[in-house]
Image (cartoon, rainbow, N blue to C red; front, top):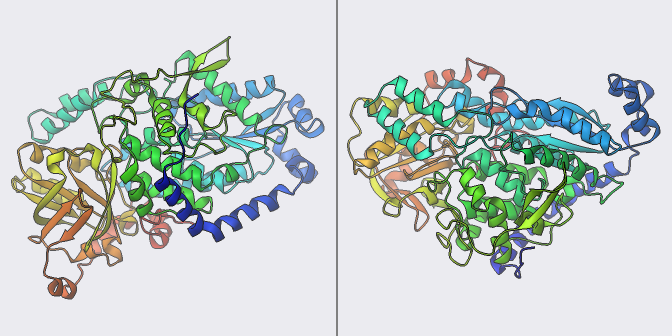
Length: 611
């Protein structure tokens, strides 16, 4: 077991501030859980017609187990589809989980499926404008599945960007149920992420054609499993480990590895152990402010996805806990960067796993007193169990082993006593342009401060057109506005990474400032993103004009338009054009999300649509 130091005083201080801020909301949330737990179990309290409908398609022995023997009954919510390479392995998981439930004298049903879109497919396309909102749609789908209300616990099958946060938000609205997340693992390593990025930059410059680009992309994305860079999907898996919601060490085992089936079966055994017949642990009680802080620290220590500064605000809110970007920023000051995984380094997640993976990071953070050790987890060993790695034992069973005391590859992971950086991989930027976040761990040291004239664009297509026309061969800060949640659903602007990277590679000082998002794979170009309030809501970004001097300083955490204050205050805000507004509202299903665009909260408030 990893050694655990006394809790760092700054972690304790931030946690207490969150606890105090959330007291009324959290108390009301827990009271609702306690009230629901007073009810008899579903099959005992429901009408006979309700029960008959719920179990009509089950085999007779399962009906007997549920109704007469009162055996535990597990609901499975799956994000399976064939569009996501990461989710394709889930096709066979329900049969495996039902079989394991039967072996343990219990039963299981697929309660429902939730939508899961692939951002890699929709990147730069109109469908990306539905991406962020799909998170809350998934949360609602999870609620619809679980509202059948006959289950003693739930297993949640999801990996990718919005899917895990959506499932988690939905599960926390059924906080009276024990829940375990079941991952599927990353695809095998293909063309390296750095080589893939180099090909993209060659294509952006016109040095190669579409055929060569497609060949490279297909060599990178080539099989079942999660994409191998450390974007939002793989950050999800790291955070679930840090929150104790996985079987320990389950995150990064290949879908077709023998160990994967054992881990999947163990998920069923684990959730059965959390039902009232075992050590009853409903997810709403498990996920408290300490667990949320553990997730935040794990994100910072690994330089994870900036998307989680939106998603985990929403996740916390679903559990009655209020966090903001200042909490992330203050934790980042004392959290060491322990991992270098692409885009923060050259390693992919398979190499990260071989170097120790989440277990190594959690062990080091616990040992440095940077995580709360005294938290509930779905595993009986507490958070210390997540600092170990699973191994096959007797057929179908597992054992967990301690990692070596040192590091297997200090180019990928480092001890907390000798980190890559004394600070976390994400930072808050504030100033007269609002509040934004930046992924500092991927940005070279000589690009952490950029001061250059603004070039204002109202969408990413305008910037791409200017690049192709050769109009960007200079120092500049690209201001891309009207990309926030209310404007168009806050799509990722990942298509801007190759051209901006090309310009940076030519020696120009370039940066991006936007109220939109970048991919979890945000790279080497400094990008102040998620700027709040957004331009369409009257945010200061709407005042910027091309030629204004912009200063982005990741070292001091500031972001300002260097415009004389009186002039700045008097300047009128630019408005989003009617044509752009209409285009954002129509086509490829965007009409159906109009209500979400109207009611969504700001990025720093989690871009929540359900309040």
